[in-house]
Image 1 (spheres, one colour):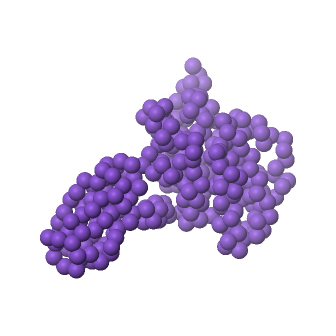
Image 2: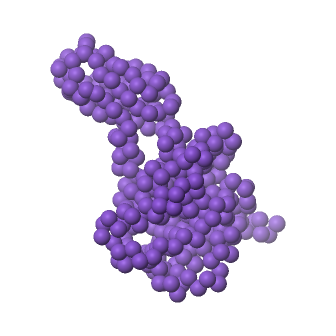
Length: 313
């Protein structure tokens, strides 16, 4: 009971700190030549993808395109690993002697999946951070944490997981965010990106559970910009097709989202002129009754919205 009370007090303290502290985060700053060590589980491995499609590999490719010299990339991760598995894997490997100048930590999904005690993660995750900092030569600016993706927001997750899974992932992410604050370590929240997997099947790999290469590319953009809104807007803009841009009487809208959507049309002063349900990937709007001018087409769905402008002749 004493240990249980200790964990309860720690949990309350963490919740308090979450409301009193902000998360330390900014785009990655890397050194060249780069020696990168990625620690984690299946999300770092890039389960169900080729080796060059994992997010660590895509990050190295993106940095190389920015003229960063890549010296080393090493991944210590395996599908199914928890914090204790990762700790055991890195023990006595003398990684601190390898002179890494960038180290990532992404771990925790299997704690949720296997319903392990929360206190175990609270003890072992900071142990991993201590190791990661040591591997980075004691420099916390060379270490970053990636949040736990929501595997319930996938086709397989929708069939097998309960709503409690997403809530538990939120809880684990609150913990690792708090440790990011305490250690002054960069933190990148990829969870909102992963939750679009419910609405956008191409963000999920063929196993219907893990991220696709396309989703990992969005993660990498977040790491390099620390602008989640821009990341989400980028792949939204590429998906929504509105044609023709200059119209006379009707317009076609195409959007590969397999849930119900609503299309709204606003005039230049923000008045709603037309609304139509969109239950398929493509729909046609009749605009013959609208005056000439510039209009905004707004597509709304559970989880977000996207807008584009057209010219009515």
